[in-house]
Image 1 (spheres, one colour):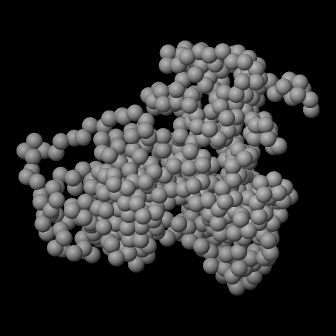
Image 2 (image 1 turned 180 degrees about the horizontal axis):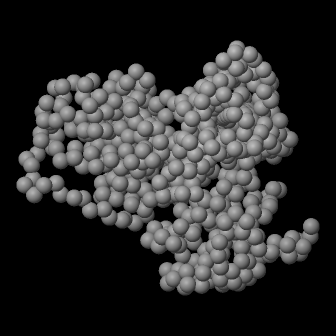
Image 3 (image 1 turned 90 degrees about the vertical axis):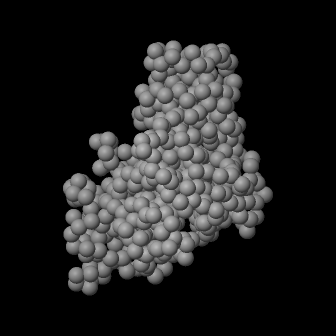
Length: 584
């Protein structure tokens, strides 16, 4: 196609098939104009580039703008074309990430430009505009992921570091594409182009020019504009460990109550909830909401109220010191916290089957997101598990795979799965439910080809064709670093409240004149919320509720000074007024 033909086709506006490209009303554009400036554009002008941070929110008043991936490079392609009334950008604009595409003017006209910080504040104050922009940006992010935009991870499917980088990118919902060193025809050309030796992989390729050789997760985060600043020598009133629903709820309520709140996570925001394709029993969302969208909304709220998020940042130590806690990180940094909320969640347990370890990350997965689903188009897959996560995964994967085999060890799907999910699973024409069935073996050299499954009622084995296996068979808590620090139950979950009191050193609490509060651990001022807590209800809604409750209990604890109980205020407890602070 000639340059002229390319331009002619490019100016045709992309239809809004997925709700990702809505149009602002004349009234909304007029309201926005009071916070920005009108600016003329010229054909061929670059409004922002891939890999650079967003500085402005741009709305098109006239003319057209083409969104390009790998602009000027060998893989240049059009992602979308926008006309009057539409706005540019995607989720990275709200979250401080770099742009994942380049905006080029194709037909000269006029744009409305608003500084990013001002736009973030506007989105937080105007619920209608905020919802419109956030939904569009979420839709665009998932389109970018599905189209394989963003950076490249070049590495072997057998490399643990390749799997680590892929997991980090997928869990953080970052647009990227994996180039398999063993099978992808593109791999050899990329190795020659960037003078990379196979032994130097995995590498991350960005903007067609930058090469990071086996970067750490933190280095990859910095590459796309999400640095994890060192908390060294800083102090916060609340340190939240874990950024799943419980941790994010604690961050929102802590920050909105005026407490200096820092939330850290070793891998990504969202926890297991972010890997859930659709949550249909979450209060307030009658048509359901994806885990990714729920978490992105929560992240937006935490930043709106001024809570600080640090990802990746892994905690490995908690030490009482001078009526506070010294929190240490794996990179050697440390910070002091007046109180701590443990919300580190759980991992899905690994399936113990001979030979399965060599297929993990290649065709055996412990999450079912857009990324994993894109790897098993039109092929049969299997899901192991009988709980809600397994049911949601089966329904989501049925939109992509030819057949979904749901393998349940027990004899009744109603035992651990919500009734509404059972009904949908059993009615879905692409889902085959196999009760009393367990995986006994995996077949396939480079990727999964079939499973050996056993009918545990009769002891009969058979082969089941499947090119991917998704495992949801219960969970284990992230508490290895807490052993010897506070009391855990026999499965490693954190004891709280009455259970903590039974296991606590009584002398530690005598001077306080009280026992552990409802969510408090055997350490005063250290609380546990969500899935990591012993006896908690393993549901997204209850996790968010416990995160909010933990902050109320933080306030109760803060009414004590050191080991002395303050004299009771004759006027009773004084409420803390929530306040909205500028985006940080």
